[in-house]
Length: 289
Ligand SMILES: CC/C=C\CCC/C=C/C(=O)SCCNC(=O)CCNC(=O)[C@H](O)C(C)(C)COP(=O)(O)OP(=O)(O)OC[C@H]1O[C@@H](n2cnc3c(N)ncnc32)[C@H](O)[C@@H]1OP(=O)(O)O
Image (cartoon, rainbow, N blue to C red; front, side):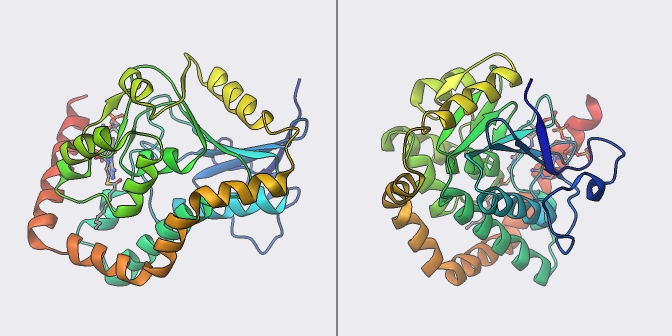
């Protein structure tokens, strides 16, 4: 049996996370919405998103994800797996409440944290894999496509559905999608706001594998990460960088402009109205269930 060394773990038990911490320095802020574990036997880290009910990505969750990524790299983990504690949602994407009637400073920090998290995940030196054990719309798809490998459980959905909410998927969301899906398929899907079923996603290459259980998904991710066992990590990281540097540089150089475009778009009254209607629909549906 594998021994799990918990570097930082929260919310799954009543044990305060600090007492479980073995390597994290005390100055590091404690986690509320993530669990981070490193398997001592394999050296592979698992980051579990745990912000019920749907792991919507708010500023705090994004910040915790960044801390976990940093932990995985500084602890020289063999790779990182991202998954969810929910049985039905990987992540519902960006927390719409961060963008609906937002406060000025908060929404800026939110978007800046998203940019940073994405750049750090997309450009991570270590192998990254997503065990997609639930729905992964919009920002959920962004996280999945930032990873190098994706495995998904059946009968869920994934894709960039922003246009259906009346918003636009930023260029960097699209670039990462284009890495895995043919251009023609991507253009049609993203303009339509299409959410692919697991089977459809597999068919177009948006996910690499489909398995029936979360355990199998984690095992597949471990297998993917293990496939680099005989590869020099430095050579691997530089080679990965060659594939990803363009998108990373583009966003790095345009961060402020990207922020202003985001703010300009979401602050439009028509966009706020559409978001309000969409949120209302989600809440009505949730009450009916
Ligand atoms: C230039 C650039 C400008 C802008 C770029 C912005 C890019 C945006 C990216 C995004 O990620 S936007 C978010 C997109 N996400 C979605 O459209 C998903 C919406 N959610 C769902 O479809 C479903 O919730 C689900 C993920 C399929 C899960 O369904 P389930 O039945 O399990 O849950 P339920 O729908 O009942 O929801 C429970 C609860 O959670 C609230 N909720 C859901 N999603 C979000 C969200 N993304 N943000 C905030 N809140 C969300 C939902 O309203 C319910 O709340 P309630 O319990 O209070 O009623």
